[in-house]
Image 1 (spheres, rainbow, N blue to C red):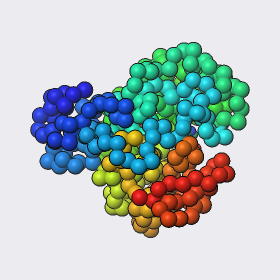
Image 2 (cartoon, protein in one colour):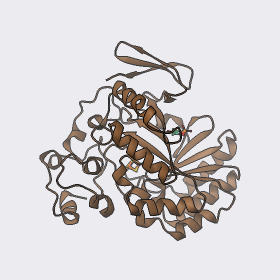
Image 3 (cartoon, rainbow, N blue to C red):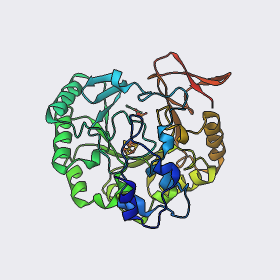
Length: 344
Ligand SMILES: *Cc1c(COP(=O)(O)O)cnc(C)c1O
Ligand code: SF4
């Protein structure tokens, strides 16, 4: 996409200088926004939270971010089959495709997303299925990417049946932003496809970052899942200028709960190249998270989590211990070793 395509969708939007100066490079993802998400932009506000998530700026091109790398989770080092990342005992992630309906400007998997890989080939799916049948400690697989719901129904059916054949006990998480960015794509035929795997436990994992994303259309798409018995959970990314505000997060999580979406994680943004302008300093994230607690019910209050750099793994502020030292937070990582994350 180009800025002229955006102007065609929204003639009332003035492209800013920072947007105009954006250049696609290794630390960016391609520019692509859906008609629906573009319709939500407030043209009068150049720093509109919907716009910040979807329209690129030259800040993505700056190499200024400290400690940043393209793959801070070191997923490439944890592959047990092509596209199958195994970093946690009971859980693995399968990168189903590198394609998304819209590319989020803060995408943490940008080493992969929006590249040239395309959907997983049949041989890759079979190799992953084989690895799953040999690793019985894996109980859940995240179908992620990219966005798994950009696959055709035939591709989706093949993927799910291959994994279920290899491991009839497998729990599958459908990780997607389609209900939020392109809600009309969620229809009865998709639900029927999932229901045809009548013994398969599916969990739908959304990413909702601002209450204005929960439009009537998005909520209708979510309802198609929840009414059919598929639990829907939200993983919000804490993003500067989008939702780094207690009242906005309160409104977001309350609206989730009112619509049967369970706030699961609030993520500290990863130390990924090109995303420094979105990162909330960790000390500030902790303050926001603590201030939020008395305002929400237990059900509406997600877990604050972060991925330790250098592949240290995920830590959770509610259950994992950490100490503060100089400019750093020191965590006990899932691997039992100490890992550090910059405070600011
Ligand atoms: C976070 C993550 C998991 C585990 O997810 P939980 O919800 O914490 O169980 C598994 N694989 C990858 C690649 C992840 O990033
Ligand atoms: S939907 Fe997910 S994978 Fe796709 S661009 Fe957004 S954050 Fe990245």
